[in-house]
Image 1: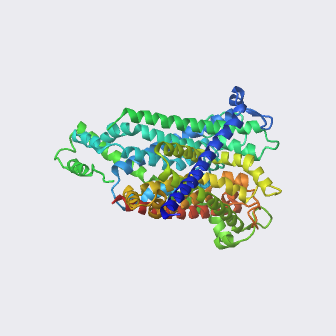
Image 2: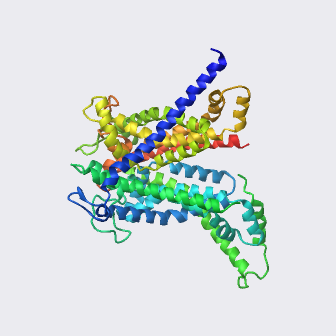
Image 3: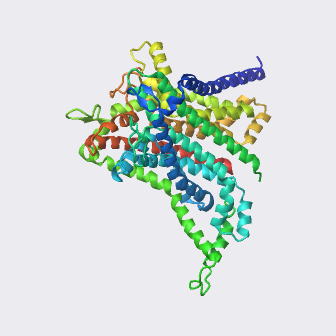
Length: 285
Length: 324
């Protein structure tokens, strides 16, 4: 066999093998989605979504867990958005090029890799014990906010960097101050990117279990939360409890809960991404 | 990227501080007011810019603070070298070795399973796939990263546990191997997307040069592109490793949680993360056991901190290399 023929054959083999690997990873993801849908969808009913759990968690619905997760996520957004967006603005618009900025960047990407259980311990030590918030929406949301912060900062910075500097210079040339330029010109232009990135980060926070294990989530609670100092049920924690602690596992309830969680998170992420791309098509620099 | 607006900001500051004799007495006019606001906002925003460093430092400080009692009463090296973990008996033993081995066994196995497939997939997506195929597979893999870890644990219980139990004829499917298989899928998106970025960052001139010399696409890939991207790929694998060590819920649900030094992958293990998650809920507030768990958290934090730091430095260097 000539060397050229041999090289071509190896090329074909390589493409086939790597292609098979890519196909494998992609089909694993699709399998995940299909499996949750097939096992979870039949359990969904109006009662399931609007009832409280009953019969030692083996019957009834998951309303308190849905409400708890929504409350936690909303409170997380309230804490992490202002700080995260401000930090993103700092990095994109104000930060000098130098050592301190480099350290901040390293800290942000390092924060993204801190295990979620470590955030849980941190939240327990600071918010639950030291600040005495107890197991509450407040403590859980502050913990989740720390975890979401790097995602929001990065998303904001990236979105701001997409805005051409001509826009800033035009505004500054008209006599606007730095902040006015950012607030009136740069931020509105970057809003779709910031919002979408933040939603992706927040939807990931909604699915986290380890950080709320000791800071917010409880096993069972009939009442709806009445203040940010209430503890709550949460969808991911409910799945964990049903899968490991409840004997005689009620299969449809677990998979129904998983379906609600994954379906909700996915639907919101897809919607956010789709909205961003329509916004992008509207504006052209 | 150069901040092109910076020269403007310099001249800006100059007008800002230009003293007009009576300016402090006069009522502030609109431009002066908005200039004052500008300064206030600048300092608020700078403060927020440092939030990441503050939080990272606070995590270290509070974990160390929580672990103080254990560090003084039991001692760091006694814990790190202790081979027994019996935290709740009358004379408790707080040895981390079984937990460290548990984490290492699960993490290394997951990496070995995930790395070949993930890297091959990254090569295909970056080098051989057409644009539509590339976009579609990237977003599907991104979805995989967004699935909550507790759901991975659930699917592991439903699918992987029975499979491992039957295939290897075991009494129980809850063991290190099962957890590692599920973890391998969980870290695949990280490894694929970061190494794909690294491959993508290799300048096209290099590929074209190699192709022009008569190399096939594959020869170009493994002789030119892969070596150029090697540091980024290394970083991708390290970040995947950091993720695997820190993963909690799926591991907690799948390892079986026996805190003893395992003889093989088919035995039940207990990881660092699983121990913290399982035991922290049942400890006495301010007790020794709680303090030991904080120390364990500190060990985990330090471990992932250094893995991530090295990976980030490698990535940063690579980014600079191609920016020229």
